[in-house]
Amino acid sequence: MDAKDFFARSAGQWHSQRVTHHLAFRQTEMGRSLISVTSLPLDDPGVNAVCTLYQYSWEQAHGASRVTWQGVMGWDKEGEQQNGSTVMVLIPTGERTGKLLREVGYAEKSPVAGSYEMDETGAMTLVTEYETLRSQERLWFEGETIRLRTSTLGYGFGGMSMATFAVETRAELTPPADIKGTPPTILGW
Image 1 (cartoon, rainbow, N blue to C red):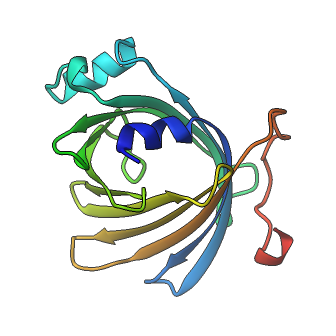
Image 2 (tube, rainbow, N blue to C red; image 1 turned 90 degrees about the horizontal axis):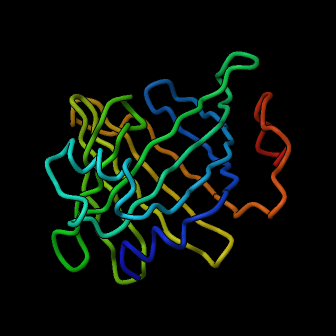
């Protein structure tokens, strides 16, 4: 599977359940979110805007998606949600490698470009270096309805400060109830 196929296979709605280990605090936090991935045509104005921001032409793009999320984490205040949206564009640099351009990053709310690599199993590894952070994610499919994700985040490029494991299940055709509220405990899932 190449990166374009990975993006296409990711289209749809996903329920994400994750556990994040905050290593500095020696604490674990549960979270959940609803993620929506929409494939975009390469000539979409949003794709063109992201490509222009990074001085690429949309014609160099290999695939694009709009990703939106609505989620809650265990440490959030009652009713507080983590919502966002970004356009992501793949720019290949090799057969299995390339740049992942984002309108907005997740760890820092500013435009960011990272790199991707597809391995022989069809898993995608993303590395994003922000001004003071380094994020590495690995995503792979365990069938048509399950996608897994591991990620690490380090400050100052000196080591890991946070590690996350997420299980994402493809949502049914009927949208689920709103996800507001406190995330359940591990046993509650």
